[in-house]
Length: 502
Ligand code: NAD
Image 1 (tube, rainbow, N blue to C red):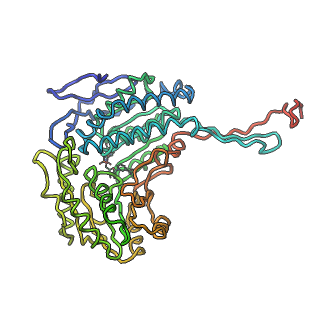
Image 2 (image 1 turned 90 degrees about the vertical axis):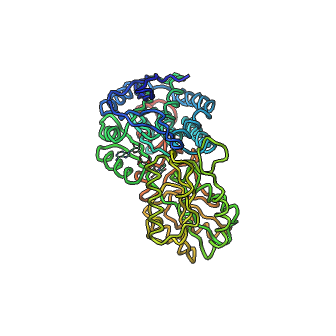
Image 3 (image 1 turned 180 degrees about the horizontal axis):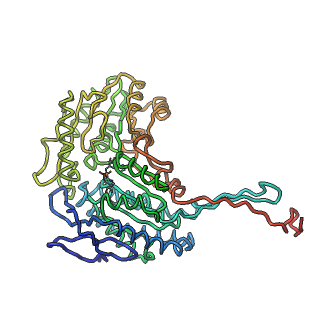
């Protein structure tokens, strides 16, 4: 049963914030409707909290910090073991909530929850990953060691497309390292984390160790300006990533800001075409193209398009568009009616720029109420056009044909983004050149979505990332700890093991 208090406004549930171990109503008086993008139904209202409410969370996190960082690292890891089990037991409830508020299909949402749980698993390794280093005898009788300590109160600001997983890129690693934590979830999808925080509360996490403040721009600015917050993790669009990075850094904070993407998928003539087509379909149209790792441009090399096209189009045509809670749906809705209009506008523009729609998702919407766009494949897309360069974040795939691997690498490297890319080929030599020369942070080899693996660092390059330490993996421990180096000697200790005084 939910620990969240049930407040309503004209019959619609209004979400609370979670501050100091309790659900508390926002006092800002401003709310936004959260809708189910498959039906248009209003699911709840999310408060747009104030700076004062964020500062209340900062105060609660500071109050909890001394005791939490003093807890043994084993105790912190053990709490995460329990958290992991409790999340797994509620996988379907979490996944159903993801589908209702964000739109991705239920099996895709279950896969997201599984990846979220992997993040918690990886964070339980903290007794190993947080270890320091020591070198005995840096001078006669002098030893030197580096230890890691928590950075303090940290905050994360997250996007709409992974309501369950992306907050867990940060929360478990941050608290494992002895920090206390504040989450500002996306105001478009605030419900899943209400369940996560309920679960954490039921497991007896001390008040103030984790806090959740709902809201939009005002809460983001309050996080970036708060003197009480030492580090900020951000995931979202490239423009806001830059804004967050610059304002946070100007205020002396440690910032990691993961931004938007335009991901290329290279297909060489020797690729295994049927399997390549399967992978491209799931990369481009899974989650209705709303993944930061979604393949967005296919770059076919030396005539490979003629072999790939029939395989791809025949599969894409069969994708059923509809409510992700129903069985057999290939493309769920996009997140909102605004997103639907933006995506359809970008398809219109691509066609005006000379592209041809091999498959046109503007006409395959499933209902008037839902925010649907069907799978769309555009060929003859010109390099340099909007469809070739800008993030569409919808189920739209552009095709560009090039003559050689050299041309393909040059094309990919002109992008402002560098988040993810895939190459489909059986040639080890081509793969070696590609991985060596391409300016992209995450690469899939015959893998359409090089999805985040919890024990490895994850991020893009160029405008897709600002900062130094990537998300999760061992980079998370680097981001969430400060190093302290101690050089020591004891005058009464002698090289023979006998006590002596110099
Ligand atoms: P967004 O940038 O609109 O929002 C992200 C967060 O920033 C939200 O919490 C939102 O409240 C806040 N925000 C929005 N506008 C703001 C403003 N003007 N000032 C301050 N804060 C603001 O992103 P989104 O639409 O929620 O998510 C989709 C984007 O996220 C895509 O560009 C996608 O590529 C990117 N993304 C990147 C990764 C990655 O790993 N690089 C992962 C997931 C999503």
